[in-house]
Image 1 (cartoon, helix red, strand yellow):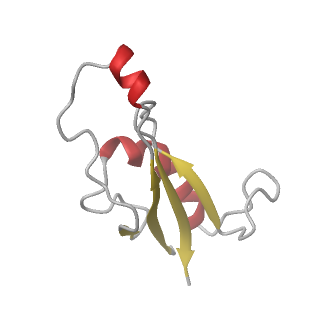
Image 2 (spheres, one colour):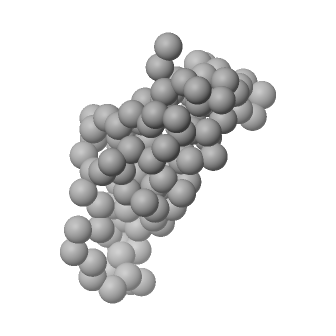
Length: 100
C-alpha cells in the first residue's frame, strides 16, 4: 500500500451559526493550517481528529490501494483529493495525496 499525506489546508469558523445553534465547546478543533499527517497502510495517523478521519478514510484507503481520479477528473492531480471534516460550524479542509 502507498502512504498518504494529509495536510490541513484551511480552517473556517462560522461564528453566526455557532452562536445560533451550538452549545459552547472547548477545544472543538486543535488542528492548525499547514499541519501534516501521514497515513501508513491506510491507518489513522496519531493526532488526527477522529471525526475528520471518518470523512477522509474512504478516500485515503482508495489512494493507498492505488486508486484515484475521483469523480472523473475532479482534481488536477488524480492521486489526490480535497476534503473537509463533517463539522458544520468549523469545517477543516484537508488535501490528501499519495506519497511516491
